[in-house]
Length: 352
Image (cartoon, rainbow, N blue to C red; front, side):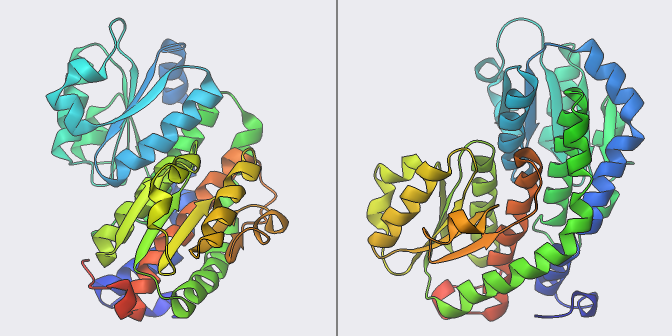
């Protein structure tokens, strides 16, 4: 495994590797960004108690929103929805319900994404309060919003989002814990930065074994609930960074048609939850019986190892919502390690 400290002056691909391996700093920065705005967030959240929640962004940040909306609805008991910012601009009548405007959360790594800025202004014109999350506190978006949360260690050299994605994801998790007044959950989230380095380096070894030992020309990423958005982000990373065929599905939906595409050159990556593990692992066993290759990612090694060819267990001891962030690094590593190996079977024409 390359030493991440040797990659500072390297190519864009190696910048991406460095940014993944050292993203614990982004996680710490995310929590600090929320803490710095605790008072302002408390006032805004109190004024919007009971309102619907809208999350809107573009690209990776939109997929982040799919996970955040699922988490917010479960934790806050309000209707939460994520939509692409472009759809909000072009078809707002299809995206917004009648009545009071929703509390709106927007995200952009740069804080200068044109669609997100336009949606922010449009929602504010409708009377909505806007919380913005990004990696530059001086950006247009974070200055425009009622409250801006800066993840300053999420900034990247690479085009593809990695540490910025995970940092903004953790910031939204902390924001939801703050809104729910869930101090236990906040304490759990605060343990993640210290867990990061050892876990990410361990994930490297597992993912490197997957790439080195298997011929793969098609990826499927399976995730349900909060993890479906993360499966979508994994798909995007695989396509944009390695130009490899990849698709996301809810676990059980994969059985209704897509499973017919499984062969010996297929890798199916399952983001296994604790709540639905019996159902999700049964899907992985079915895929394995059809000759597909499987990688299970989740908390408990004893649950995963009997149902998949390879597994990566967090073994974090953290409660379920706090563990959701831990699915992200191995998904990012699947792409970057594959590209660094330059395997012909992985079609790794890099596009950083």
